[in-house]
Length: 354
Image 1 (cartoon, rainbow, N blue to C red):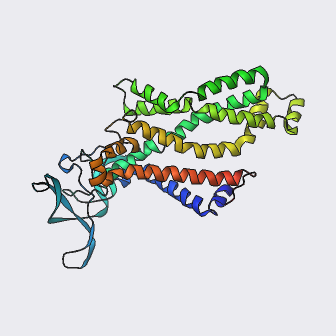
Image 2 (tube, rainbow, N blue to C red; image 1 turned 30 degrees about the vertical axis):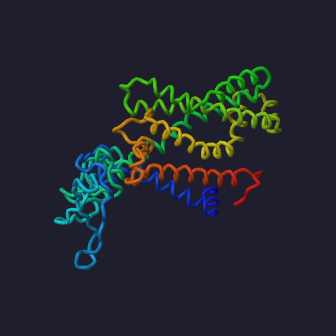
Image 3 (cartoon, rainbow, N blue to C red; image 1 turned 90 degrees about the vertical axis):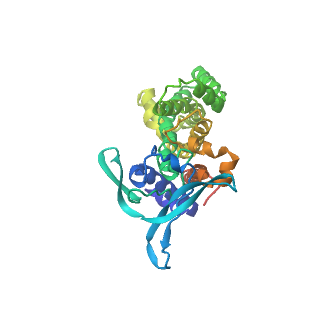
């Protein structure tokens, strides 16, 4: 709690913390907040622009928020499909509306969504994609993958890195040499290209969940080496401390000394490294999915959603498709700001003070 108090004294770290807290809260309750499921599709609204929301009626009076449905037409002069509002019917935006069925938090069956319009209406806050799927809803569901891949990878990376680096640094000698040479060999592997190769040769019949699990494992198995190397350097200095020598004299086993006395001394670095490592995993997953080698359609992730925006015409005429890129930028920037602040708080030797 003391760390959080210090974080809130730094205005940039405070904003980053709040932004990340909001993002994770929103993706946790995505089923309730999103007006549609991630696979809901209305092909008649392919690339429909964001719905316009009105609070003033035709007579200039204040009104409850409402919107109109879009009607797709072909403009012969522009030689392209355009969307016009059908102003024959208003659709009022209401809270806790009845919609598609889902399980709240995966447990409680319900059909209530935070907001939406009555049957027959269409509300697309950030427009739709090529298949007529709601971009806003898919952003929320896609965030569950993009924002959790980093933490799931860390569950593998840090236990391995801590134990491997701890053993290497404590035993020194030939054990240290052999273990570090192996770690350096792992570090020499070009990780992103390896991911591309492995993802490309995966069986086509794999589900997105299976691909997601494999991506997590692959990212973890090539990411532990650099962390282990830093831990090893810290252990080399910590093992000469008086309290470690005292435990050794008292007859404590080597494994007990490593696990109970040396590794806990690396806690500050571990917390900093975890915070600063998450963005790289988010970018790696997004990059793979953007290239079509990660999470596959119809399942959503910010990476495969952003892939649709790579066409120049989409960037020019459908800027709402760039929303996943904006969220990736915000999330990565927030993690970096938060990581920098935590480093300044936990590292007494840091020269940068906020």
